[in-house]
Image (cartoon, rainbow, N blue to C red; front, top):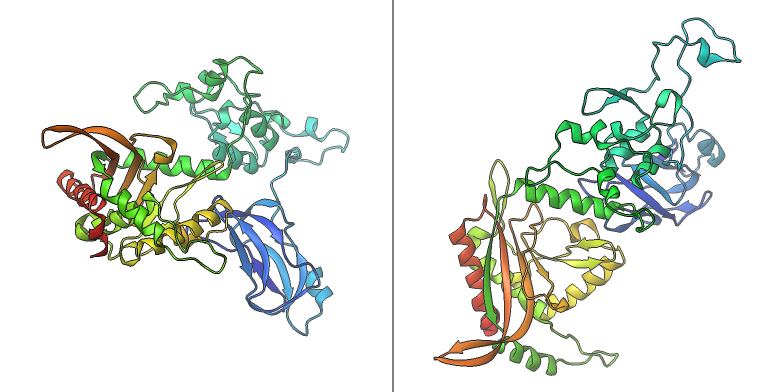
Length: 452
């Protein structure tokens, strides 16, 4: 019996992905464990391994196809001893269809009586709507659209009622949504979202895309559609800022002892077979270790909030923000409290390299108990970072710089670094957050305590 190969879920929240590449072709034999394809999500590219043995009888989804639903059939495998042609010929009934660039017109509305083939539209009853269900815009009017158009509009954050339909009877089709993404074919805001009283973060009416475009001279900008990573970042961080009461705590850390220890440790690093140092510690490596130990010293702050209970984590799994060309990702150093700083350094280099190549596995960037975001390398003195749910805290790290400080009544120069802790007030109270950042400061200023 033919075996269906399904689109895998790379994470618990994944609903669709892109079939980036087939590594096997029709007629190839495969055995369990063979890598047969590469699947791409917004943050990673994963290899798909065969579970069963047999021969690829039919590939139903071509490589490069986007937005393939999880559990959709992407190929059919003929089991050992089975007729490959017969297995392939029966495949394809449930083949998922890729999102087309343009969409065919809707089927003609059905007439009560048979209509002449020459003019079926004219003979159809006027009351018969297009077969697709109609969406409603904010003012209550019905908007006829295709399922694909509705999904594309939802993903793009565009209200269907604002899109001028080019399909039969003004029906909105996928091509109309694509035009709307670049500001074409949009109705005035009064016809849609603005009339519904949509508001921004401070209570003022939210500006529609059309209003925003009206502020700029036509031809004076380039409209770059959002990719899936940017949309995911926007959705998650908007949810975090809207639902999470956050407060911020800032301290200045003296890096004098840390800088000296770092230079001494790096100078003593051995060489590998290629003659390169076995490790080269950065300030950020010390920051990760200090945050991990601080969470162990203040275990009440090493938590995640859920509506039913507080999750108190046994280990310090520290996410570290890594900048990508069109977004960011936070690979996680697991159990950072028990790893040496050199181990953290080498692991972080590996994670960052694979993150930029989109080769991380979901378990390498999902979860975590807290995070670190370091913009010091850009010369940023201090900033606040947005917490990455379900975590309850994140540490924003500024640059180390020489400042004038007072010691024993004397003004002296010292290398200082400002750090700001963002806390979810549902899980971490002000005093508890202060304990956590104070514990971090003590470790950074006395790095020998990290090895005790």
